[in-house]
Length: 322
Image (cartoon, rainbow, N blue to C red; front, side):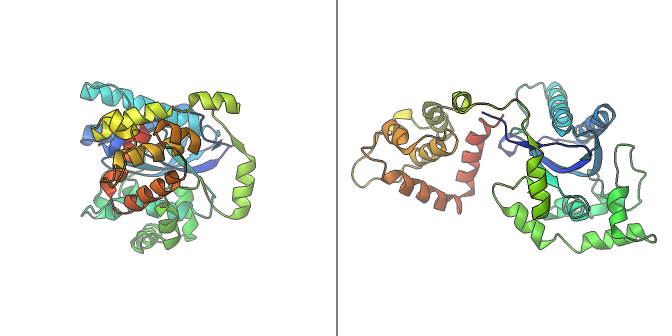
């Protein structure tokens, strides 16, 4: 599938996130956490990226990164790719480790860096881990409190300077973090499809003008070739739900029990394959397109209540987001 737009320029700042496929763990013990930090250190030396703050959790990570050389894509391909290789060697496994490409939110400097550092450092508490934040070993918080000497690839100075104080900076940052996450950020990150810009309207307009893709622009005809087929989606859906392909594609008459796998396949055919209603109707044995929007609406209502079903859909989607 075509790559999403990326915005890269010198000294850009990003909140970068990624998680394990199907929410599986990507860090199992101290060796794995340290291996990822070593990989970040190597990326700093090779690509000049500056890690401003970080937090590593068992199945995902958060990074606040500044790119003096405007090369986030190259640096993160190195980080995710190299860590995956090393992880697979340690576990004697193979294949993808992460759910797909990392998510990168372009951040307006001097406006949201300080708030984001607090959001990242409070991640263990927000995840329900019973721990004193300064004792959590896999975040940069202890360095922000002056408890430890920061490694050369960590750059907390720019964010601490935004407290606008020359005295007791560590204590003031600790008090700032203790206040909790901003409601504005909570609302921003609670949305399913996170907007790739965090900042003012003028910043977003300017950043949009800087946009570029990781690859050359693709024509609509070529993009269509890379979209998965409805047939492929039906097969994957049947595998995840452990039902037959025929039970998904064949229309049932009369009052029947809700066919959730069929609903999911229709929904993904529209969302991932961007199929037209007529194409979906033909594939699913429908005489008209009228019932498709209603079926998809019913599924979306279920997703608000059924997290297990939501996870299954995310797992299927992840297989196309590599």
